[in-house]
Amino acid sequence: MLIKCPSCHKFNRLPLERINQNPVCGVCKAGLLLGPIDADQASLKEILSYSNLPVVVDFWAPWCGPCKMFAPTFEASAKKYGEQVLHIKLDTEAQPVIAQEFSIRSIPTLAAFKNGVEIKRITGALPTSQLNQFILSLF
Image (cartoon, rainbow, N blue to C red; front, top):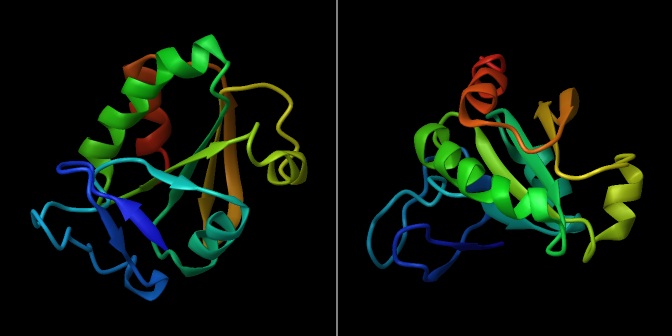
């Protein structure tokens, strides 16, 4: 899987077996999990099956105003909690099948997973404090 470094923006090839080992960028050595990971249908399912960490998925679309407003908040959360909780972004317009599979009816929607099983969900562009509460409830 390719992960874009949140620091230098270079793409890194990461075998999913290493996602639990705090991977670092091959160029700048920054933590690869300290930013949201863009996923598609296949990579989301693989991440959910391999990750020992809780996973929070932001189901969004490029045309969605609240999604665009929420993106910096989600990115800040990834920088803060990225090595404790994986932050995944999934574009529902580009991946409609997976959005339908997870019954995404409105966006942005955050879904939290542990051991590949959805444990919690919330809809709407959350303020930082509410997102922090959502993340902390996963520990």
